[in-house]
Length: 183
Image (cartoon, rainbow, N blue to C red; front, side, top):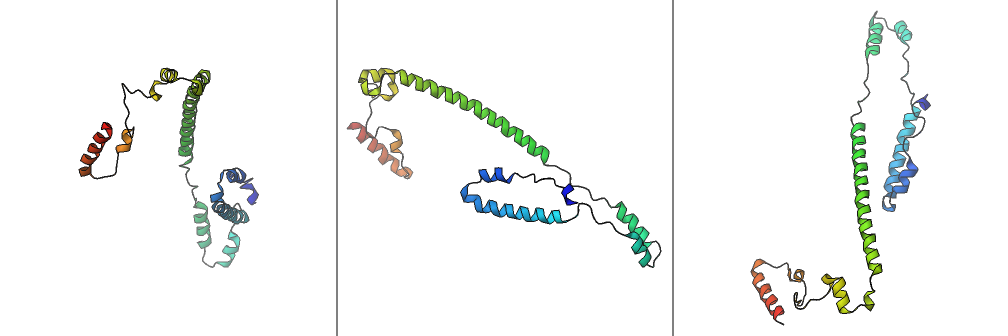
């Protein structure tokens, strides 16, 4: 009887197990065993509710019409199956995720093409070990030291002047910058 309800489990436990990290393996196994227990309990129950032997009750109950009234009321009871509100939302969410994945793939392909172009340019260049300073300055001007137009002083970057100090000490920091620049 119960075999008509579920032909096979709709959960692919093997596919889920492949994606579970080792740190979550115990939680996964506990969840799977709990699910299996509920499934076994459900499969032990009949697919349809047991039929009531109304003739037996009519022969045993002395009040006339009482059993017929219960039978009529019992037959009129319709327990609605819960309405599915979430499948559409889940399907829409899945479509949005697929669109996001496709967009990510397109953006990733662009980045990969740019990286491949950059690698091609670098592979065609003269190796840095064989370059003179002038070659390096011509090829990569932002990486070379330009003492005339952009002099660099220790610590060479403004980020090194950022401290987690109160505002009143900013004057000390500015003084230190001036001292460092003078050297």
